[in-house]
Amino acid sequence: MNTTEFTRMFGSGQIRARLDWSRITEPDVLVEQDFHTSVDRLAEMTTMWYADAEGRPVDYAAPNASPLTVREAAALDMSTVPRREEDLSLYTDRAARSPAPVQLVLAAYYLYSGSHLILDGTHRAVAAIRARAPAAVFSFVLRGPLDAAILPDLSHHLAGDPLRT
Image 1 (cartoon, rainbow, N blue to C red):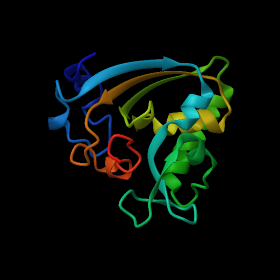
Image 2: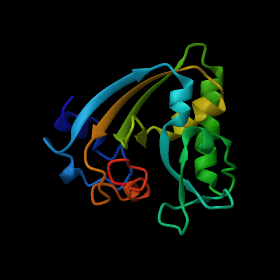
Image 3: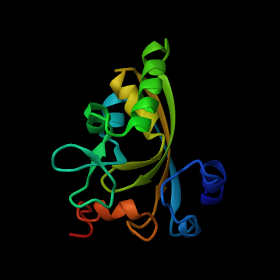
Image 4: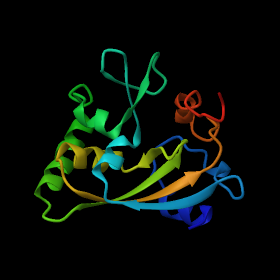
């Protein structure tokens, strides 16, 4: 898949992240595909959901906002974000009742050392972990600069990039 196909697949409002689509172009950004059935790998993917020091869900721009892994998000009390909790409850119930592995198609951004930031599919990924359901995960991963101008959420990951320290 190339960036034009990625944009066609995910760019028509599918991804609600503040992604600057005009900067998702080759050769600066490439698209990789990743498939696995590891629940541990899914649980360690990074979300665009954040918590403060007290463990309360907050916006990415909040002071001391810390990005959550899928595992951390699954364990977090989301009652202060009713719409998110409603969606999670629905997806968790579906995942728990599924006789086959939950099939997840995710859009993601490559961070560093194999870590992926989920751009689309976070609710379904968190629900699969909440339900303790087996999963088949197919990710389309943008690999480009860690630049907050491309995606503001990337600002939370610049310090963890071993190439920038």
